[in-house]
Image (spheres, rainbow, N blue to C red):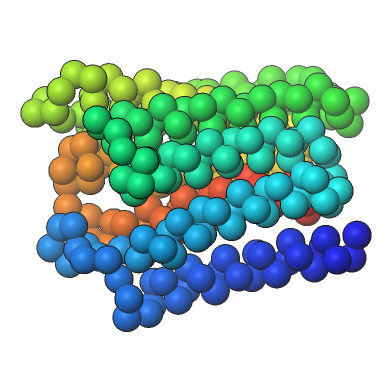
Length: 242
């Protein structure tokens, strides 16, 4: 077990180092918009794959405090990795935004399954009303954020209906995921999961604002990957440290 713990800790440190080197190093992808450069493609894909590896080791290495949580989180991260490949155009799609939203939508459904399975297994540790209260607070907060944020900051009449409606539906799906994550934090102390869900929402909002609405955000790609990686790490490593 000590070897597994060391491997997980090493992966975590390596992910931090890789992100820092990617942000501050001289190697950057060419700017998509003005001075909006981003992490080099190999760094982004290596980060994403390392998150899959961390989720797998936590689950299969026996380091997970709650195995069923880490099992479904691993499958969710695997779906996210596929979404990253689509968004990076390494898996060709007629529309990478739609393809990415489908892949990440599946990932969020798997994360929700992880949260539900966890609460069912260890529900004796917390009153059921705390779970309901946390979920209600989450749905209220993220529901308003998703709908109002989509209307004011993401919806773009110049884009096709599929993109706009897809962005709204996807925003609601990720809002549900974050709501369940908040409920897990409120009921059972999985606050790292709740923070991960919040950061995931922030990451996808930045993508919607820049890629769909077309608003210029300085260093947007860096902010997308900072919030995305931190969000995924929160969800994945919660199964190890909770």
